[in-house]
Length: 258
Image 1 (cartoon, rainbow, N blue to C red):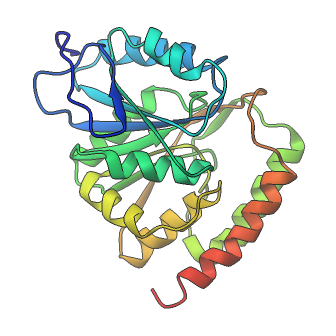
Image 2 (cartoon, rainbow, N blue to C red):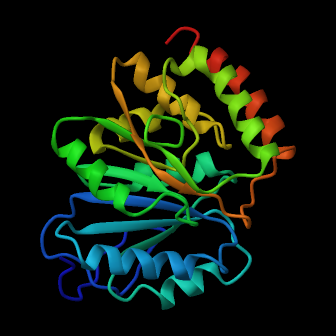
């Protein structure tokens, strides 16, 4: 359960918020990258607070601000009641850069990240946690394995683009069916070691991450989820799609001798 209110001493450049924190070491640091998320982050934090309050495992949230110019950070500060939250900033733009900054800032035995829109149901957190406790080192949510469903489907253009991207990524990630679902949990030391070597700042960073894990001989476990597409997503099929395909070439080059 979430414990009594206690301020965490922040690292340089970080802001610890006065939500409830744990009296025992936090088993999981969960990174949430944000960029101009004032319309969604409040609901996300409220949902996380309710979910974590009903559970037995304390979780610290590391909110990584990737250059927001709206009220995102103010809303995080206002909605942190009942949560152990630390807000840090990322000097480089891009989701990959923000997640890497959060993972390298983490200290917990387990670490992971999720999107600010919570398209993946929070029930996945407990499932992934149990798998990590059972010895799995990398657990990722998947929209394409047996049992997965779409609570709200993606538009057909995004769905087709995603499928094409996965086909091109297969030589790098092997049998992994869904590299891009924004919910992944890992053994903490493993994640920090892998992210320290990563180079991509954009959306395709997930492919680099999984490719590097597989090159270390790590089994990546996919968990079926009921995924909800968010119509307010900032992902552009054209702009970000082109950049993601370009980044696949960069990943191949970067891992050529790994």
